[in-house]
Length: 330
Length: 252
Image 1: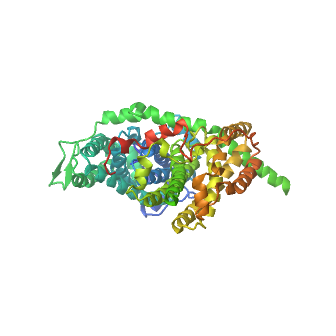
Image 2 (image 1 turned 90 degrees about the vertical axis):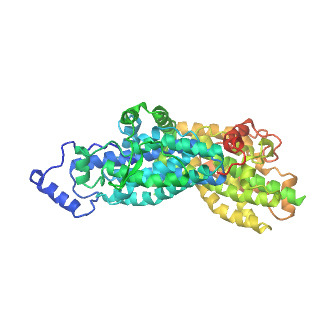
Image 3 (image 1 turned 135 degrees about the vertical axis):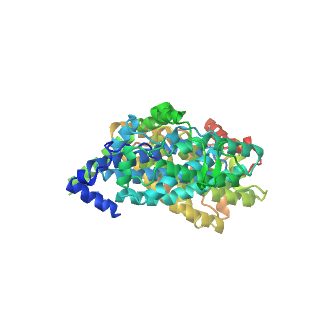
């Protein structure tokens, strides 16, 4: 999931008796499965929560270019280079759709960008981990995109129309990315002893950070309860994490790789795998800015923005001159 | 002789797109604005796709059992045949987009002529690549105009980029034995034949961009012949070829 610990109103879900007439009508539309569109009335809390969630997702796509961009210039074949370029280009495109969806809620892309660069808004914890070998390109596609899809597939049914439509487009591309990632892992896992070692090492390093992508248990979270009532969030974090583990275990077996969790086992009674929780203190450190690559990621984004200022200003000035010349000619 | 010249010609086409595609891909995630991140990745992707076709055909013509990947990842600097222009470092965004435009202006004209090549395989690759190159030149040309005729700072940066890159332009119009053999076999146009139409396109854009063409200085050469590349190419290859060199024989 590319949005973690998104804050909602923090006040819990209102009962019918507490709702105003407008709020009750709004909730009825959500309960009936209707889509909310930009011009429709919506509670302020719904709008703000969505901006936080969509914004965080968009920022994750943008920052997410960096760990994979790290390997584009070192991709081992022309085909792998082309596939990785296409993938990173898709991610920038996802960022663009999502910023557009957020703009329909009355916040500009530049405002959201400033919030990212100032550290006021977050992006997914996963992109603060380094990509150290080529196998990491496989692990990111297989595990990170796999975890993202777990969350994004249900979000295709989310109540906000522009967000739902963005998700439908994004999911098509993400599942392609996940297959490509798995294909890299397969090549590595069935390759030379060094390649196999890289593949296992990548799984070791990305397993727990991938489980963290779903966020800590939110069974008792008032924020999540409100988001679920509004259908901004469809499943609990624990449900999605369980689903991800159940899906991934047989895939790892097929690769001949070992998931780095001695407690991992099938629980017949539950019909699910039992597994160890990630180290949540590490998770909180990462989202507070103390992950392995937080500084590098933010420095890279700030540098891109600052170095690019003259380009943005130049193009805007040119557009203004062109428009003025056109007016003068008329 | 013609086979050897044809191989060299195909390396030139493929190495240009490979090295420029690599340079452009270095921008990934670092562009001035999201739309540019997308456009630069897309340009790099097109160029790498063209590389697969050119170097694939080069490998076939050579007939030594090498693949396009072998040519890309296992040759050293002196066997590369790209123009010096495309191996120049990215510099700022202005230098990157100007380098792109100067190359695109030549590339689109070259590909247009190659669609009439007597070699049907070359004509087919050129026809596919031309569609992409037409889009590239339109985009890079518009961006050069926008930044040249933008603010004082953007104008100054574009002029500096032009002054820096101008001496690398001449190499694309200097013919040698390979070009002569290609022209004789009606495979490709003479290098010099492209000078007028390419210069015309470049001058038209620079004029709209309010940029001044620098005084002609000694034209740098040595890339397409492989005789004297710049120091930059070795560093680029060090990065690009590292995995293939570090783990020989592995499949990826």
